[in-house]
Amino acid sequence: MKITAISRQRRLQVNLQAAEVLARFFLDHSPVRGTGSTIWGDIFLTLVDHDAMRDANTSFFEKTETTDVISAAYSPIPGAECLHTADIIVNAELAISEGSKRPHTRKGSHWGITGELALYIAHGCDHILGGEDNTAQERQAMRRRELRWIQQAREKGLLDKLVAIP
Image 1 (cartoon, helix red, strand yellow):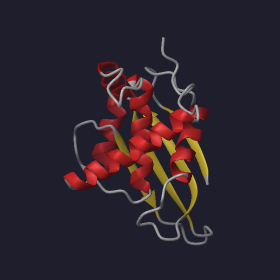
Image 2 (tube, rainbow, N blue to C red; image 1 turned 90 degrees about the vertical axis):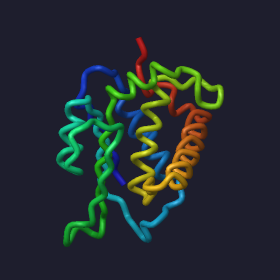
Image 3 (cartoon, rainbow, N blue to C red; image 1 turned 30 degrees about the horizontal axis):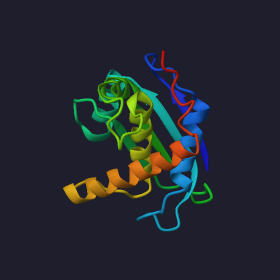
Image 4 (cartoon, helix red, strand yellow; image 1 turned 30 degrees about the vertical axis):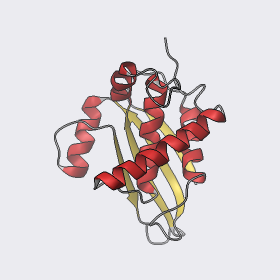
């Protein structure tokens, strides 16, 4: 599996290598649900602003508003050695505004912009692994799982250099 992080926004300075390591951690340390024997090839993690996220939401779901994250997993191309690919599109601008509102609200630990961005990355990874959030129960299960992953990543120091906070 190759994870490539790309920034298509200018508001948040993100260490793209740290974002790739974090996404790999979430994907490697998570039980695979609903994906059977999925073998991942390329996974693209793209950080965008509100306008680009709104455009992506329109393209993928015909919705005109912005959102936090969009995930799309693709079946292998014939002859591509059964490698699945995926896009995880993360709204970095929303992570700034939402993370600034709650610097210490997740189980007493520092949250802020870094925690919010990590949550969006975790949520995107959860979706490509088969996580669903169509019901309240599914949303709660996903959020518990994602917060657990973030706590484990924080304990390993994987969030320390994710975002450069001025």
